[in-house]
Image (cartoon, helix red, strand yellow):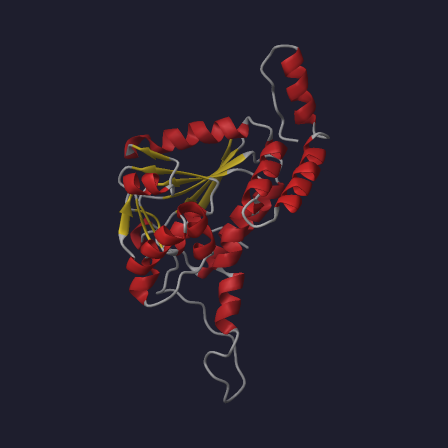
Length: 272
């Protein structure tokens, strides 16, 4: 898929910067943009040059406001007499669209930081919550906007939000659709840090560089174990933990970490 000006990516010192670049449209995603992002996260997962990822939006007003409802792809040809929307169409679009994008972040083997520069609404809010760490400008806000449109949350929202804030808080945010300022989002556990807007990029860079110098495979295993921790029973969790340790103990970074400890020096991890 050809890259587009509405999305940009840049690799700098092991950090992949991914920017949603439609500030005039409040960084809403068209279908091609959504699919391109999913492809990029999937590619980055296997790219040894990428050690960490920052996802952000252009401008000061919006991080991402979800799907661009004004820009819909043309429907595929249908047999004469077929309904405009057949049973299964909507579910397929959701599964292959926003769910695929959110999953590409959750399953990415690299740590992903959301640098939320403005409003994160609907699918855009869930895009941020799918990231491993979320830092937000003081001027940012989060909105579960679905109820305002008469629709149920998608993009993995019920799964993501409930795990972060609990059932009762999740229902409140979903049912009311109120705007949640960054400071309140931090109190609820949606955000790791709230930063002055002018410092957001520098804070994201410092955090991403720190992660880029970390043992990448150890982070990948830790991420996978943590993401599954609320979904599996104890026996399964402990078995997966044991096999996760099996995986990381064969890495060069693990050998370097032990050697650095013995030699009383700082480790220099390579990411493999």
